[in-house]
Image 1 (cartoon, rainbow, N blue to C red):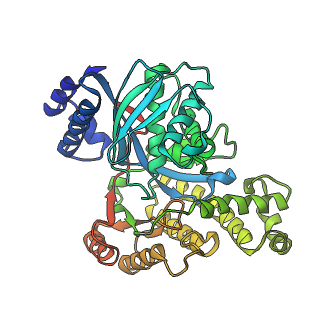
Image 2: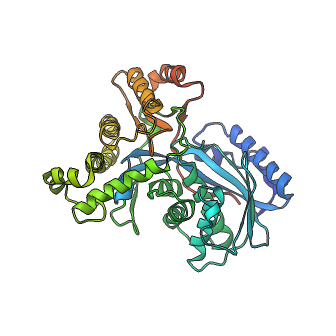
Length: 426
C-alpha cells in the first residue's frame, strides 16, 4: 500500500512509464499517467488521502468461436488495451463501497451474500456475486473503498462486465486472499456472479480472456478445468490493425435474445441425448437433422450447425496463428462472420427487423476492405460492434469510411494487451 500523494508523485516522475507502455501497448505513457493521476484524485475526493493500491482488468476481443463456449466448445480470444482500473483500499468495515465514474455510488454489505431480487441486472449484483463465490471458498472477506474508471465502453462488445467482474475479483483476492486465487478461478467466479446474481446466462469465455490476458486458445470441453493455451503471435508485426466498430445499435432489452442462443443449442443437444452440442457427433447431427427440425425448429438446427463449424474454425484459427499464417487466419475470421449471419442469426433481432445497424456496419466494412483483411460480428451480437482486421495501408480510408456511415468516433483501433487482471501499482 502506498500513500495517494506518493503514488501521484511516482506517476508524475515517470517511475512506472515502462510498465504502462507495455501494458497499454503504447510508446507514450503520458495519457495513462494523466488518467491514473486523475483516478487517484477522484478517490481522494470520495474517500480521503489514504494508503491505496491500483488495480486493472482489461476488456476482451473474441477472435474466433462465436457462441461456442457455452456448448463446451473452443474459442480464441485476447485481452485488449482498454481496461477498467480502480484505486482501492480496505475500509475496516463489512461493506464494499465503490464509486464508478458516471454511475451511482454502490454499497454492498457482506452480511448478505445471496442474490437480491432488486439487484438483478445491476452493478451491485456483480459485486455481491463475486464476494459470495470467493467467501464460499472459505476466505474471510472485508469491506473496501474504491473509485473506478473504465475505457471499456459499455455495450462495445469488449465485455465491460467481464472486466468489472475480474477487477472486483483481483481486488478481493489481493486484499483478503493473499493472492491465492488464480486467474481461471477468478474468471469462473465472474461467470457465477453474472449467471446467478446478475441474471445473464453467459458462457465463460469473456471472463477467461479478461482475467488471463494476452492471446489465448480456450477449450471448454471440461468447463470446470478449461484448457488454456497462450499463443505468442506478434499482432503488431502482421501488417494489419485490429478495429472494433460500434454500430450504434442499443443492447437494451436483448437478454431474451442472448438467452435463446444457448437454450436452442441445448435443445438440439437434448434431442440427441446430450447436454451440450460438444458431446453430439457432427455426422449424427446431420444424419438426424430432419427429425431435429421437427423437434426443435429450424433456427435451433441452424444455430447448431453454426456451432459445429465455428468450433472447428476456432481451432483452425489458433493453428493458423501458431504457424504464422495470418492470411489463412483472416479467411477463417470472415467465414466465421458469414456463419454467424446466416446460421447463428445474431446480427439483428427479429423483434425490430427494420433496425439492422450491425448488418450495415458489416456491409460497409466489406466494401471498404476490397477483399482484403477480415470482418465479422463481434461478441454476443444482435447489437453493438463488429470486428475487422484492416491492412495498414487501408486504415485511414477504412476508418473515415466507417465513421462516415456510423458516426464520428465509431471506429476504434486497439492493441492486444499482454496481461489480464492485475494489481497495477502497489
